[in-house]
Image (cartoon, rainbow, N blue to C red; front, side, top):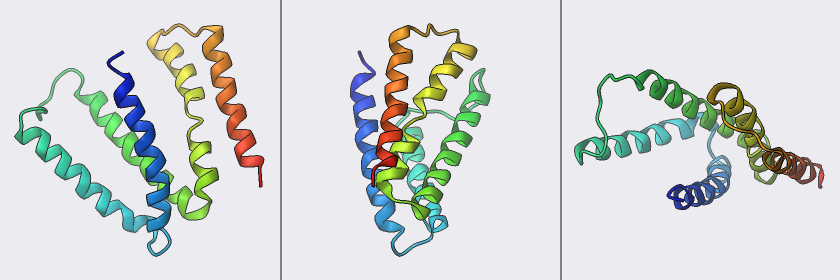
Length: 136
């Protein structure tokens, strides 16, 4: 279970991102958050390359890495835009419904097994999103 600690860290970071992003958007437009985000990515990437933990070069998976990077940037921009227009307590749970899409796409493109338990769990996530966003 080497994935559990980073996954829990991701949950915590995304939870705090919803709050910190909304606080920043009290006085900034969502577009103003983009340069700060880019600076943080640049500094992180530079540190990884300098310490030898990452390398720049074209290999078999580089195309997928570029696609993933583009999707990560797009997702964050869309989150900022959504947070600028809506309540964090609604926006973040709605954006957290992506496991439903991941489940379907991983079955279709990665040939991963979709068990009834995974389907039930995904339905619970989507049901939770509906309940959170319907509550006033």
